[in-house]
Image (cartoon, rainbow over all chains, first blue to last red; front, side):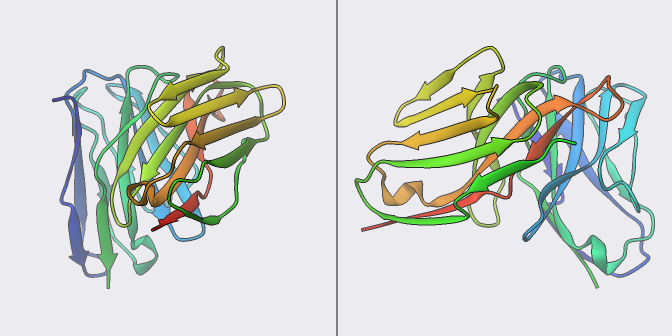
Length: 112
Length: 116
């Protein structure tokens, strides 16, 4: 089954403790991206990747890192999480930049 | 900078009614427009994708139209059912800031409730 898989689905952590949210797709898509969703603000792009070893900032990249060492994986790294990073995070992938986007089920992160 | 607006923010209709959700965007230079459904606390389910060269797409009781020149799209839901209750998101894929990549810009959604 074609899908985008995020892990974990739910995470509660403390301020400053590094964490990684994984994202994997099995559709051989070139383009992957991360979004966060906050009430009243909608979904905003954090980072995106056009292919292996090619990443760039989205609209709200501060406090986040990404890497794209393999085509199928695009982890989101929070080196020192803060409470304002409490949010619902989505990973998405598409074959190319202009094609249909597929989304993971989301990761609800709470930083206390 | 692309901006996407969805009206209304919330809508309540009785079961069986036909309804229209609206989406407008500021930059008509788009690759495509995608409608999603999101249930509370859940992920995004893609409903319809309209490429920039298309005028409409249909799937079952759903019909989405695109008027790129005026920066508008509508999602028509026929014979609404309680199971249609969810938030509907419109997203536009357009050229990113760097000029080489593309990005999805989302509206804040329309929360639909279909009552018995």
